[in-house]
Structure formats: structure tokens, C-alpha cells
Image (cartoon, rainbow, N blue to C red; front, side):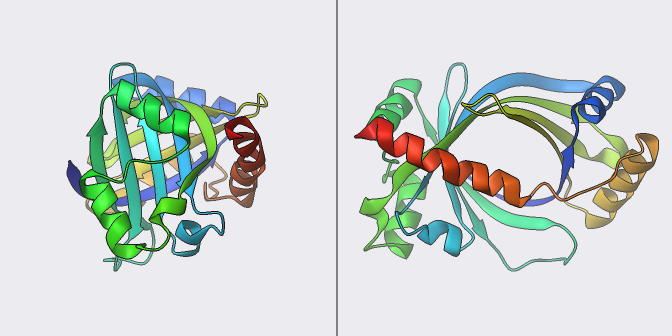
Length: 207
């Protein structure tokens, strides 16, 4: 289990910009993961700006809830991440049932904050991501994601993470200038609509 406070800038990219940035900085790690998202039927977690997911990797899995925190700065996204390790068989069992784990620290948080709704949490969306971690400028770690959805749609995204908002600002400015990026927030309505669209597909599979 771990708890991490994150400060990060999220940037939506096109494929060409994504590939150019990946080629420009040293690669720390390159791996694939599947992402599975949960919420109540009335989207209570979304309403509270929380996000619950199970991610599966090649040889392990983890359950995570992201919760809002009192921001130390006003410019970039900030949240507390609570994680619990799962084995792949454990994760596959939860996903087959369409339910998250309600044990561990994530489960404790859910049962404390949603005592009447934790049992209603169900799988509503999924995607697959190739994630590349890079040593970026100004001591920032860059996370480059290429994500695909069941209908074949793809998107590309960059996260710039550091404990220092000033370092994130400088790194973002350098990358924007170097790669002529029209910087946009990655928290776009189209991404949220796509998750909601797949809600109906997941429900159909679980019936």
C-alpha cells in the first residue's frame, strides 16, 4: 500500500508530438497496462471528484483511488493517490465480477466515505495504455501515454510531474517551445464522454 500526493500538469497531444517527445528524452521505463474504472450508478465518485480504478500490468495489478486534496498551488492538478497491490488472479476475479476490492486501504476509504454506496460500485469503462516514463527537463518526470479504446479510437497524453510547481511550469514552457505545442488540458470533455459511452458496453457484458 502507498499514499502519494501528486502535483502534475496534464497535456493532450497529437501523435506526431507524442512521438517527437518520446524520441527526445531518456527513457526510464516502457510498459503496457489495462485500466478499469468503477463508479456507482449515479456517478457519486465523479460527483465528488474521486476516481477509482484497477490497473493490470504484465505480472501484477493495483487498485487505486484518487481523491481531491487542499491544493498547495492553483495552477496544476493535485490529488492524493491511495494504492493497494493486487495479484493478477485477484484483479481478474474482481473484473470478472465487475466489482472493485473493498479490502485494504482503498476499501477502507470507500467504506468510511461511502458506507451506503460502496456495495453499488461497478465497472463502467476500460482502456489499454502504453506508458513511457522519461527523464524530462528541469528534473521533471514525463509520463507519455498512448491509450486505445475498444472501438479503435486512440489518444495521446503527457503528464509532467514534480514536487515543485515552478519546475513543472519551466518544463512545460520548454517543451511547448521546443515542440511547438498548442498546449491544451488533457481533461477534455471528449475523454469523459468516451468513458460514459463504454459504460453501456460494460453493463451489457456483465449481464
